[in-house]
Amino acid sequence: RLFCASCASVCALVTSTPTNASLFYNYTGNNYDIITSDYDTSMSISGSLELESALAPLLDNAVIVPIAFSFSDGINTITDATAGNSSFMFSTDSFGNIAAWDLFVDTPWPAPTNVGDTKSSISSIFPGGVSRDTAMIETCTGVSEGVCFAPVITSSAITESAGTWTVVPIPATVWLLGSGLLGMIGVARRKKAA
Image 1: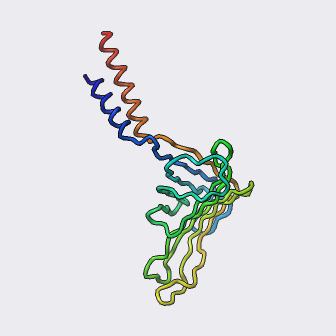
Image 2: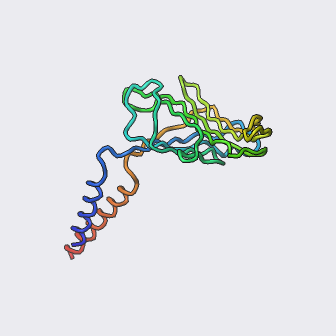
Image 3: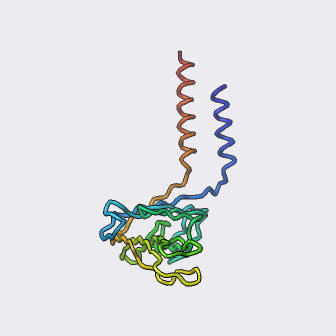
């Protein structure tokens, strides 16, 4: 009975999940080589994009609009909910693997803008073998009519080696549920054998 109930739960979950379930593309950058102020060389850029489907083969600097995203520079995290600007371009090989990319996200200036307000930006670029991950924190040093006109970079971090992308096609909860189901099958079989 327990087995049947578990099977029914799994079937309900699988049938309620659309066949074109979203994919997560996760980026792991290398540690920064050049730093100023708040950053240190143990930090790096990392993040993820949620896409409706896999990237197509042979893309050439295609603009991609993710369902959601989140990137961290080791100090600040910028998500689709907190970003001011964002852009994502990808090139892929004949198998749909990421071969080159250019991404940028930043936070908007706070409103109303005051001297001392900060904004952060994260970028990663890997076109034609040239790589650079950059993180910056800018501080407003001059304001006119509620707009910062004199931002100064107060912290920055750079690495000039490409990070790596991995694809996660199935939510971890499905794997967890599946492994739990297998464990329950094993227990049920042991009880029958006894």
